Image 1 (cartoon, rainbow, N blue to C red):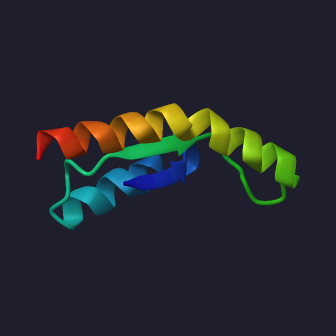
Image 2 (cartoon, rainbow, N blue to C red):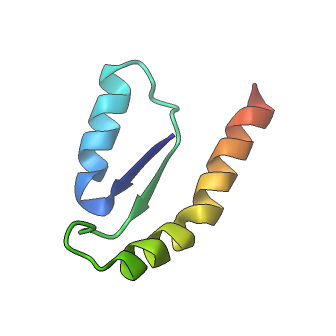
Length: 63
């Protein structure tokens, strides 16, 4: 599972393919994270929880 900001989506996809992990799930949040107040980072993380749980659960049940 990869978690990144939307600014790095193309890099995430490139690295997945380059490492032979094209099916590795990933979740994105809006860029940037650096410089945000802690409560803003917590809000971004909380918003990502459903996508992360879905991706990890789908992968676990597929194996």
